[in-house]
Image (cartoon, rainbow, N blue to C red; front, side, top):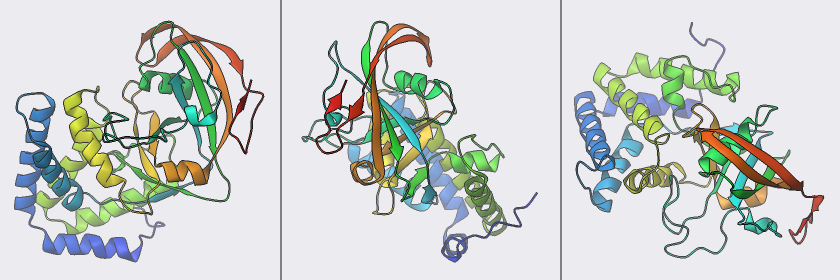
Length: 309
C-alpha cells in the first residue's frame, strides 16, 4: 500500500529527481558491486587496501549511492557501560565520552577513528533489562567483570537528529524496527516509492546493494580490518552540524538499537540520571548474562559531576 498521507520535503524530491537524471545506472552498479567486493575482501583479509583506497571507495558509496536523512527523535533514554576494575567511578566524566584524546587514543573502533571520541550507548526502550544486556554485550563484558552503568535521558526541549544506518534496507522490505515511530518509517517508505518510480533499474539496484552493505558490516563481529572500513563510513555519516549521531543494530543482539553520539550532542542534549555498579556473574553468549547490581548512586552533582554513592 502506498503512503498517501506522507509528504516528502521538496528538497528530498528534488534530490531524488536530480540523481535519477544525472547518474548512470550501469556505471553505478558496476562501481558499487566492485567496490563492495573489494572492501569485503579487505575485511576478510583476502586483499589489503590502503587507507586512501578505502576512503576513496567509501566516499563514492556514501556520497553517490545513498541518501542521508537527519531524522529528529525525542524522549530517548540511553545506557552506557565502562569497566571499573574493582573500584567504582567517582565522576561522571569517567563514564561519558573520552574528553582527553590524543592522536592514537581512543583507538580506532567500530565507528570512531583513532583519536576520535564518541558516546557509544544502547537505547533503553523496553521496560525490562534488554538495553543493559545489549550494552554489556557491546562492551564485550565477560565472567566476573565489574562495570559501572550510566543512565542518560534526552532533554525535553530539543530533538536529537539521528542518521539511521540500515533503515533504507528495512523499509524496502517492510520491516519496521520496534523502536522507530510510524512517521519516520513511513517517510523512508515514501522516499523509496519515489526512487522506484524515478530510478533506472540498475541505478536502483546499486542503491539497494550499497544500503545492504552498510547495514551488514556495521553489525558484524569486530576486527581491525572491519574497523578500518566502518570507521570511515561513520565519519562521513557524522559529517555536518545538523547530525547528532548514528543509530544502528547491535552486533550480538541483532535488531536492538545502539548509537554513537557526538560529544557536543551529549553535552547539550543529554542529562545524566544515575549510575549503578554491577558485577557479571556469567556470560552465556550473545546478550545473555547473569549479573548482580551492587549499588546505585543517590545523586549526581549537577555542577561538579561528582557521583554520590
